[in-house]
Amino acid sequence: MDILFAQIQADLRSNDALRQSGALLQALQQSAAGRDIAVIAKTAVEEIVAAPASAVCKKLAFDLIRSTRLTPDLWDTVCGGIRTDLHFPDPDVAAAAVSILAAIPSYRLSKLISDCNKEISDCFDSPSDSLRFSATETLGCVLARDDLVTLCENNVNLLDRVSAWWARVGSNMLDRSDAVSKVAFESVGRLFQEFSSKRMSKLAGDKLVDSENSLAIRSNWVSSMVDFVWRKRRALMARSLILPVENFRATVFPVVYSVKAVASGGVEVIRKLSKASSTSASNADAEVDSHAEKLVGVSDVLTHLAPFLVSSLEPALIYEVGINMLYLADVPGGKPEWASQSIIAILTLWDRQEFASARESIVRAVVTNLHLLDLHMQVGMPLVLFIYSHP
Image (cartoon, rainbow, N blue to C red):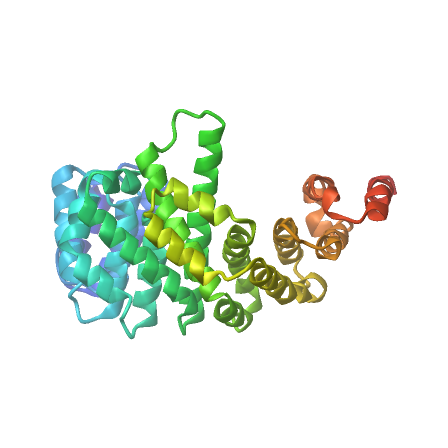
């Protein structure tokens, strides 16, 4: 084993990109086998991360770093390499450098963001699809992390930078690249899901949740993103329709969550949690003219989603669309037919073999939303469920 490790280290110290990439692949195999590769990781940091290397070698080196633990001095070296790579002419090298931000420990993250703020922000304006993709995907994961929210509590400058990056992630939902647009939708959906789970945990009395300041910070990001999606909802729906059909599923929840928050008045509660000024709240109110406009917004989204209930061949997409349409149907002034078509579509999944394990979820979704149906359908639906469950 010592001979193998010595050979890997020798290859890493060579200037041959092919030998270096082969050595990194061998090291990853050893790590996957459960062996201690700390000594190889040290060499990779010094010879690949902190030195000029190909984009492939950089990506493999960062994968190796993620699979092991580094000492603080090695993390300093990694951060120095990231700063250098962000200026590298090859956008693929810069994209690899951005991707490792998700693995940076909390105690180094704040300083690295402060040092590289301009370089990271410039990634969003890059003509390279791969660099914009890496920035959107990585920051979408990093910015929603609990430790970063905690860091923002005590650092106003960091909070301003992170808030600006969330705005850039949101605008990338309309990016010309399908891959970038998809990860932006996923990042915004993750922000909404994190906020909802944290808020429910706090309501349930969980002590291991965000402080009031952390919740206020998240609420401010969420309310800003909800306002953006509401304003751009037609453009976002149009953008989602030209994504590959396998990517459409990622676009459903962010749009539905935002429209529901505005139509139900939930965004006002979120703004109160964010401790936003009354001026900003009144300005946001002015953008939504009336209850009728809210209902039109809801109807537009339901019309946008409805075709996927009958035309999609993918059960997971039908279920995702159906559940979100039910979530959206429960708004003040909602119509029973908004819920009925979703419930009928979800019930058609009952006999789909690939969805057999999710029958409990189907029953729960139908029973939970029975109150949205007309009275005669409320009476008949339990019988339908009984027939489905007792063929």
